[in-house]
Length: 209
Image (cartoon, rainbow, N blue to C red; front, side, top):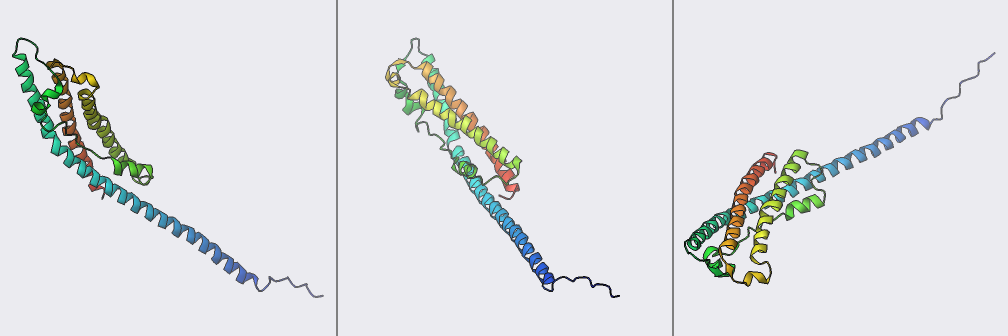
């Protein structure tokens, strides 16, 4: 009595299995390649964005160095003028504008710092793949710039141009003292910010930017 033969697989099954495996492999490989390309593109975009931030920091340092000595001179000039007023027995009346040519020969001369490159990179998510420490340190220094130097010189502007009362003659000593304090604070913040920006710039260059 003969044993029934075991049914064999269709002849096309092996070829279909190989072709199916190759298709799956090609799809997976495609995903891997696309992800790699996106990662390379993201890193390139982050590097270019930080390159613009580095250039902005270098520019801000130059801007600060171009004005800080003048602001320190303003502090000294105001101090000399206050000493003259203190030598007079009676208060000297006038407006702060009558003193600007003498104590602020170049006006306020704001440093004109920029944060566009940094803000643009943040808004477009170009820094997401960078190390947290690098991004955090850069953010800290830019916050210092915004809440320190930028804020102080705006306060000085508000003090000098705060409505029509600034044109009313009054004892010159108090507004000059307030202005001197403002410029002294501004110059100190500028010196400190220069050091912080230089330190940050060195760190970013070490990271390859």
